[in-house]
Amino acid sequence: MIGYIVWPALAVGCFALAVKGFSKKGMPLTRKKRITGVRAAVIGVFCLLLGLACSGMALFLVLDAAGSDPLGVDRGLSEAVDKSRTVVILSDISCEIVEVQLETYTDPPSEMAALVGWLGSRRPGFLDKPFVGKDAGTLRDAWGREFRLILGEGSVALASCGPNGTWEQGGGDDIVGSAVKFISHEKP
Image (cartoon, rainbow, N blue to C red):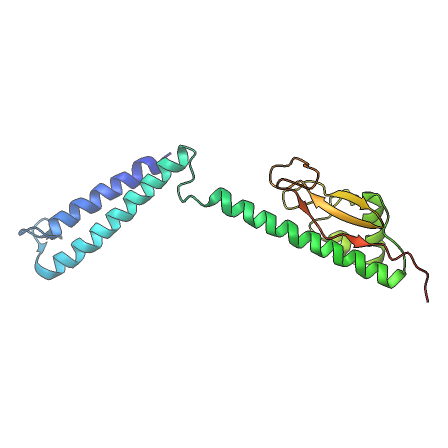
């Protein structure tokens, strides 16, 4: 709240000093001394730039309070970062599933809690990863929502509802990870 008063006041003060820096009288240093000439002009330019910066901050505060995105990137950048994080999480989990399959010659479970337990029991540190839910029976995307487990013909995949949080059967803005095929064979 105080910023609505301070930034405009600083801007006005800087602009006033800038104007005095270019006047014949010069800028006041004390009550009796004044700075004139090139020094006053240089200080005046600096005060002008500082006044512009203070005006920009005041404008930024007003636009931010109005609920708009002053820089125009906040929402889009955040969404893109969360989408990228979710894709990385899906890739990480898919790789973990494949590695455990190859080590144990077993197929992953077809339920989420069992899948998390299956990975956690065979991969030290898996349950400590940030995308594993606090109850350790869920896997979560970048928005903190549970992944969906999609069972196919001999495969399993994980999917996120995406930014809008609505499951659209793998369409719309849903993010679907790579399907991991079941190996379904015995140890050699």
